[in-house]
Image (cartoon, rainbow, N blue to C red; front, side):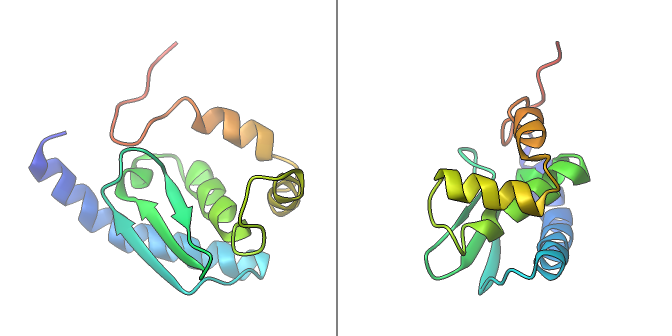
Length: 118
């Protein structure tokens, strides 16, 4: 991506992602402290033990269904700060039983890269 494209995406991401995270928090009843949008290539999001959530600006290039999945995933880390069976059950509960399906879809994407077809 050209730097001008990244900056245009940053503007969209900073408007869209915090709004979608807030909507997911309201829907699930889960709470976070602060959200930041960063140019990360290694992960879609992260959550600190303090409840601060960071989202990759590249998340804004995904379908809304997958953005919501990442938001719910990170919100669930405010309760379970790990990837235990309890964590995945909690995420699955908040996603209406669709965690595995959404996780599989998300794996076809990578932050900052175009999706591989096929």
